[in-house]
Structures are given as C-alpha cells and as structure tokens.
Image 1 (cartoon, rainbow, N blue to C red):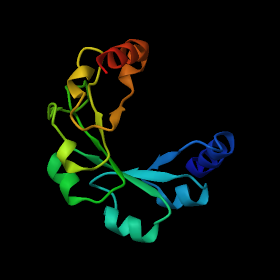
Image 2 (image 1 turned 60 degrees about the vertical axis):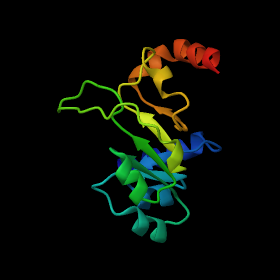
Image 3 (image 1 turned 45 degrees about the vertical axis):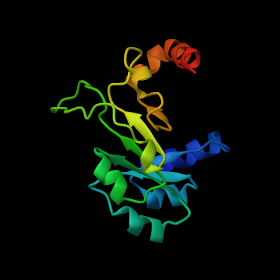
Amino acid sequence: NIILTLSKKLRTILKDKLIILSERADIATIAKLDGIHVGNRSLPVDILKKKFNHLTIGYSAHGIEEIKEIEADYFTLSPIFFTKKEHPVNPIGVVDVSKLNKKIYALGGINKENILNLLNKGYKGVAGISFLKDLPHIRKLICSAN
C-alpha cells in the first residue's frame, strides 16, 4: 500500500513532528503517526476514539452544530470565506467560536485581505493551502494586530 509506505517514510524523516493522516486510523497506527482527520462520511468519532484511543482525532465541520455534537480533539470549520472549487461553495462567514471551548481552526478562502476578521473570534488558528504565498504578509498583519 503506497499510503502506508509513504507514511512510514514520513515518520522516519519527521521523527519529532506531529503528523496527521486523513481517514486511515489503521495506517496511522502501523506507521506510528500521531492522528487522523475525518469528516461526516467517516466512521463516527466516538467509535474511532474507542478503538484508536492513542490517536489524536480531528474533524472537518461545516457548521457550529456539528462541533457542538462531536467530541473530537480538534476541528476545522469551513468554508469560512468563498473559495473556488469544482462544486458550489456556500461560505458560512466569520463565526465567533470562543464560547464553544473547543480547539477550532478556520479553513476556506482565508487570505491577507480577510484574515484579520478572524482575530478574537476564538479560533486556535487557520488552516489552508492557497494562502501559503501570502504567509510573510499575513504574519506581519497578525503580529501588528496583536
């Protein structure tokens, strides 16, 4: 299995780094990874936590109600802002998650123009791919806002 092979190599290379694999608790366990990230089409989080209690379990949520109902170790909440996808995207907008008392990362359409809207809303951080090119600018924005 290519995923298992690559996961083992990744663990060897990144011995002391946190590594989360999408979906595959079996492979994460065998490769000695730190956790898995699942969604609403995966096995339920409570079942995964019982069977794989050594793994950190993250959950992709698309609304506050999901986060309230599920006991994952952390969540991504998306899409916060519009993001170009092959399927229709309905952004949920900036939601204050501070009263939920859970580890939540904002995801979806985050860029240097809108990231400051997420400050002081209870997010543990942000996750994304498309804003990587803007990281130096985003770092300056956030540092100057705090």
